[in-house]
Image: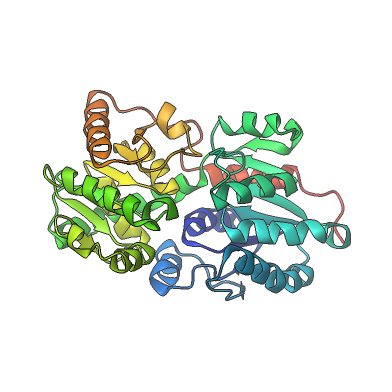
Length: 371
């Protein structure tokens, strides 16, 4: 079975790594395309090395641009690759521009190539159409022949949109495969010692969503909230390039003084930071999942989440929207207190074996004919 796997941005890398391993273990031909949507070495190449991802068979090098331009560039560069490789399956993961762009190309070439599309992490919904990721998720699910869901709350979203149940397979959360494989490595490293931190005696934070960092009032509110939390414990903030750029543009640099600022971290270091934290405050989707798997309290700094299972069955809480400094502080205190009383078990399928179930689903649903 020939499978073309696409990765484009940092959130994809943790998902494709175990899929590639599982495909190769099962004796299938796995071809990796890196679209280059994330072009910064610290945000891309480092992850490939840490996660043991092979050198991409094709690197499209599209770089940064507006959503429309970037999506168009990916489509233009990917079309000849897809036509040349002629895979039985295109596997796309997550909800970035690379996901929808490559799925759209494959869908338009379906008649000529007889290739099929599998979407890993299908069925997640925030119901917030202001998020580009929501558009990407919904469109990719409409194009896919096989929808591989990460949690049991995803399938009802798909059936409500008219997608036949025969296309939907629950496989669990493939990102947790990577987490469980890398966790012993992260815990054995001296990341916390190097940073002068003690386990459970600091709070970790990440911040990069446009809704939080592209508006000076919103960004100032979040930074002030983090400063309030820092009155109790040190708040460690690896600073995303987009966030740093806007802090400088809005002249908010003095608001970083109460915080411990770091350069962007690689996957293993960030996992060590998350695993050792008393709590994580974040606007990242993946970290909501990782904290739930680790049993670490999490406060999500967004209006909605496409991962409600992290709230209903995990350690995640949503800060009141619109974000205020006091709302962030109060949710942090509530989150820590709740997890201290009882740590929820991991959701079903978050067991480190999702990639194996993905490969089995591809085998079970493989096209009967391929040209």
